[in-house]
Length: 269
Image (tube, rainbow, N blue to C red; front, side):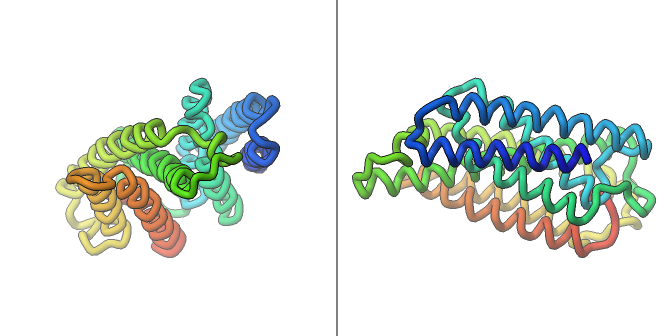
């Protein structure tokens, strides 16, 4: 029930942002939406803590539990952005990702893993923690990139309407995208490093052709591609924003396919 409450609170915060946008960016919408996000994160933390206490297992392994934790990390990231007034409006693009992850987690069931983990201990916790941070970095970059593309279109069309006044300036969105990609790239590199170190010690447990391994490598390549597109001349900010949106869609779509269809538990079990 608490997981469901967190879902509805995230959804409610998103709807409040939309209402604030439709109303012409007037009123106390942002403060109210920020408060609801805070309540959602607190409820989510209680839900995940109860899961740990009840099952004696961190919510990192089973598909539903992992997705719920991924949504929670996204909520924490958004909560950290809320004190910065302009940047907080990125929440209108980040909240759908958080809500969808929590919704899918509820649909598949937030339950403990039904298989014994091969990869356990502090190494596994660090591996998954850095992986979550990595993907949240890309989610943040994608959210900023999505708003960047909208704002760029508004400026090009010389429309100074509600979207233009609601969305942060291009420079702010580009900087936020850079931070998200770099933080995500470093975190995911560390996550893959912990996973690689474990596979060196246990080469018989998981093969390079395993779908989860291929997905993790694909994710790292997406990060590298986004960073490379920032190099060179021309509209590198625009290229980076577009690449962040496309890359995140590719990573998230493949993640859902792998986690919901491939046997095993954990990111690289």
